[in-house]
Image (cartoon, rainbow, N blue to C red; front, side):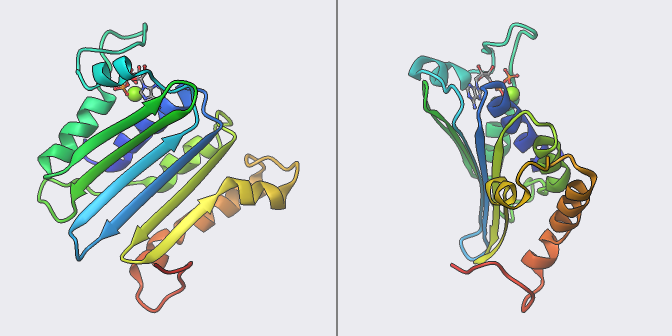
Amino acid sequence: MRELSLHVLDVLENALAADATLIELEINEDSAANRLSIRVTDNGRGMDAETVARVSDPFFTTRTTRDIGLGLPLFRAAAQRCNGDLTLRSQRGVGTEVLAEFERDHLDRAPLGDMKSTLLGVILSDRVRDLRYEHRVDGRSFGLDTRELRAVLGDVPFTHPSVRDWLEEYLDQESLVLENPGGPSEGSD
Ligand SMILES: Nc1ncnc2c1ncn2[C@@H]1O[C@H](COP(=O)(O)OP(=O)(O)O)[C@@H](O)[C@H]1O
Ligand SMILES: [Mg+2]
């Protein structure tokens, strides 16, 4: 895939399908270590050990609407092409963690792509209660936690036009916050 955000979308879809009420997405970029990692954690129904093992096999899926699920195998292949790997941890009734690691400046490493649309698609879909997003680049940090937003909004839904506009404008600042040295930053490492 041409953008890592498409792999992320697939992992988020898996979490939604597992009826997660909280999804956490963390992207960590460390230029000194030349690493980029993407971690998605959900509190959905999880998988037993056998399923975790079988999901690593591209010819397995528990979905009945299609014969083979390739989301995780394709994400793993993308990471492995970049001297990285994908690690899957899951526990039935507890949740799932997907960690994909890449060599950051590898020639085959796809750009992150449109994270804004990916996040908005999930937040505005009303298919999950809460989402926490954090993107760190060399100690600079940008993030969003819908639990904090919810506390401010009360009963106003995320799909309210004013909230939508605010979310769009807020997420537009991501590259500014992460790329502009000396610019505003939320917290430090
Ligand atoms: N976060 C998750 N929680 C529970 N089960 C999951 C999760 N992610 C993946 N799975 C299981 O692994 C299977 C394979 O996922 P994936 O490779 O993305 O293919 P697909 O989503 O097309 O089935 C899913 O069908 C599901 O059974
Ligand atoms: Mg999938």
